[in-house]
Length: 386
Image (cartoon, rainbow, N blue to C red; front, side, top):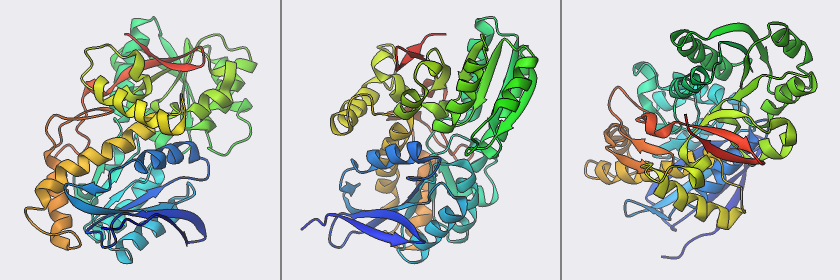
């Protein structure tokens, strides 16, 4: 069968791309990513990984349609409605920012289309009721990341923390989860501030944090906007430890941050620190294989956690589609319903960023094997033992 090449489309006033494999593809995957806007550093690497996906899924010719939401939740919803109503996709992959994923719950539930998101917050899949039964998630939860981070803090003498996070659902989720584990480990949050992804200055917030004299500061954000508060802390002479979340793990963070982000402590997943993982880590082989393939195509040091999450979507689909095909054919409501059900039955499925075991009550399926600590050392993300 003759294969088509990557095509370009325009929709909703945003630049977007689509690639179709198979002149009459049987399985359609609709993808919404933030390839432009404040979250572009996340979306671009996710898209790069998806462009490496095989041309078939469980033996079915696959068509992948990628749309850019510009880091705008409203545009994400419009994209997803288009993918469902006009392109008649069998599954949605994305969005990759929390506000967009939360907003997307309405169209996917209304149209009974499963959605595999790429966000960190568990709010899109918990509790498993109502609209959320149609949502799944690839990235480790903020809860699990806060657990490994606070454990490291406690082991290294941190007693007080100043918090500064995004003024949106990402920041809310991280504050809530971090606060719970901080209390459990007798770590006191002595100051809490917020900032917007597009802010040009956070001096006021940083000065308030520093006036509380915390042992460490946690910056709860994702992508390159997280460099600003860290640089401001450094410029203002803060000498304590600076922690970030798993949302920073992109080459752009290190490039933009330079010496100001050296020594940053952060929780992450296996792909980011694949080459320095312990040899007995269950995902090391899969993580290294993906990193080698990705960097051979996009350059040394180009891999991100978000690329790893996107890479993991393919084996998740391969696993679930193979079983769903026993019930119905792609392009039907019956197939979408069956696929949603089968996505709940991954068992010890090794992906680059962990090992997946899903159920009707757990639409993430990752355990602590998907959570490790890292440090920015000599301009690179490096594994850090507890």
